[in-house]
Length: 229
Image (tube, rainbow, N blue to C red; front, side, top):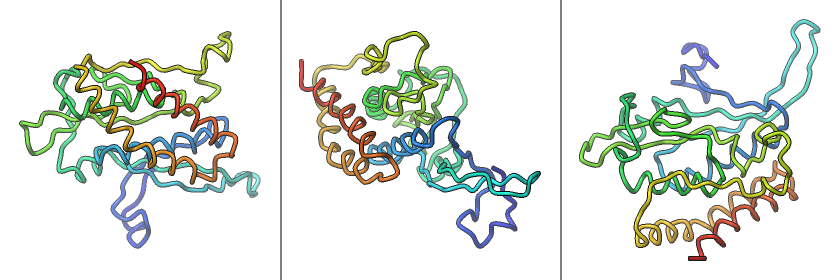
């Protein structure tokens, strides 16, 4: 959505020029699920997109009548993500080896937690790259677009003809190989975040109780996995 500066000067959209609006293409709950993922990743790092939930009234101007209301969410502009973190966006070719090591560990394990395979660093698929003022700390990756994750489990993300029981996991680790000690450290980091994750999911009342239970079970499966050598 594009905004005119003069029209939004005294509104919550002040200083905004253009914002991505994520809307339902099938089920409203899928959008809320994805919105929840962004809120979870906000707990992981400030190098993440902020989101704002909205309810939109769709109006048919041809028939001059209200059609329906649906929840959607606005995604923070990339430029503002960079500014918040005293960084600039980079578009040069990079590989995961060029990224800040801790940043990429947290990101790749988080993508595993939510069961998202729809991202690549080198091709910039659903990944933004930031360079902070401290060049010695390397480059940072910031993920977005999580609708193809197992966490959301949208119908359109499922391969046709594959039985549902084969899709319950959908987790593939796409990060780099690290030492046992490094993995232990990152797993402990996520163990400490578990109560925060649970709280965010449980407090998302726009998701049905049944779906919240499914999402929590999906989350708990990750913690079961990392407790096994």
